[in-house]
Image (cartoon, rainbow, N blue to C red; front, side):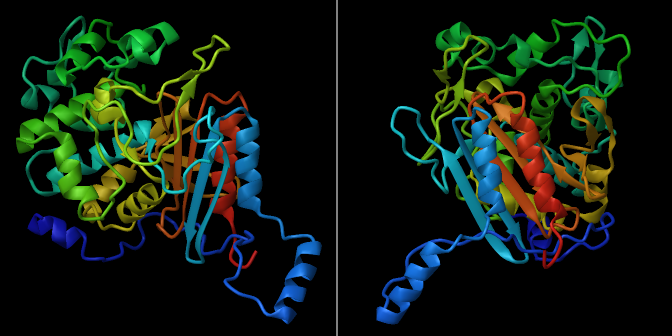
Length: 401
């Protein structure tokens, strides 16, 4: 581990990042599980308790509500000073009826961008590169033509989605139609090839403006390799997943399956017929969306990020300094979105969705509370509202309520 990595992981807490929103609380979720043994008196008490109404479990209620919007499976995990709470609904695989595994792996989609941005900002702190470096400086000639000019685009603009570079995902058949998925789900892409596909599209006339583009983070991954001599995935492992002991988190490269117990991903592609899209070569999304993780690992990662264990104060300030992102209904920093709360204040997240999987991680600015929601299947027009509503309720929970 680098000396700077050891310093970052020394356990210091960074105070005063943003105005805390007072979220030290526990969830009023009912616990379950039989005792190992009971005498006659405790048997009687248990019988009486079973006959009485059980306390409402708000987390389970909200997870059930998400599932009713048409998702195949849902898993939620909440961590706070009061402990950990989890709930699940639906099935891991439609054909078997098995439940979503508690510690199973999921495709995180664009939550990957927070990992990639963290590595870039660590390199900035180490003096290896600058956010004001141009794309051309690190990748000569890669972003050129049809109105694209890497000499005018900075690393900051890549991470902030203000580069004006078109998004490549519309050019990936396996992500857009059932026929494309069946024909090309195992196709291997190179980062250079993905960028070339994106650059066939012209730069918008009003660039630079905020415009979400996965190509930005594919380029960021290429820059990480140019700076360090190692792939972005190896840098994520060395700098983040190994030091934090995120054993369920990996960047799978070209491997199409998910390791260990996992829920299957499903999509209908607008056809009304559900397709199992679990197996998919993630090189198509690379540093923008290929990381596989678990609910527990994501909670630990975002907590470590916001409490200052992964970034120096100056770089964490850069990451959490935001610009308006109208398409998200929020603000966006560097690999991190800032979303408003119904109770006032805000929380940080990075929405993720790829190949039948949906991820939403909420973390309070003071890093005392996280909420992770993982869902499979398309859902319907109410799914996202139900997911964000769960996170909003958790983030707004008041102590003792």
